[in-house]
Amino acid sequence: MSELTDLLKEHIASVEGKAAVWGVDDCTPWCASWVRKVTGVCLIEPDWHSWEEAKAKIDRAGSLCALWDETLAGSIMEETLDPKYGDIGIIARPAEVQVSGIFLAGGLFVWRMRNGIFIQPGRPLVKAWTFRDGAISAASHGLSTAS
Image (cartoon, rainbow, N blue to C red; front, side, top):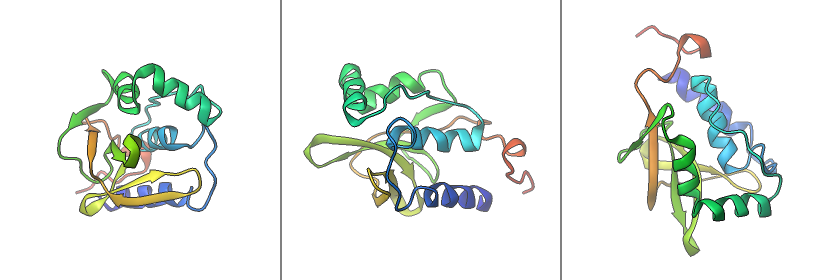
């Protein structure tokens, strides 16, 4: 688990204090790049380049959660009611805003802001997904397979 912890710390540090680039490392592609780091699987190829384009895509899907449901259907991720460290999900923010992020220890949740990251309790939970058994490819991602 410590290799996974180190990898997630590096993932978070890579955007701390940096402005998000729409379609590259805003909240959705940032979560998807986390999944890619630990599984080698590319979940999305963002096709937006601004907040307005991202919002239009979310609105067409009905919500950020609905967009993620479409993206993750039949993927290496499965819905969970009990997210663990490293799982991804959607939480609700004030004014019914949904944000995607990654679950940390102690029920915390980190999400990509327009500038940097924000860590808060992972509630209210809209939906969470965990890695299906065998999805994390230890050998091909530098994670130790020794127990």
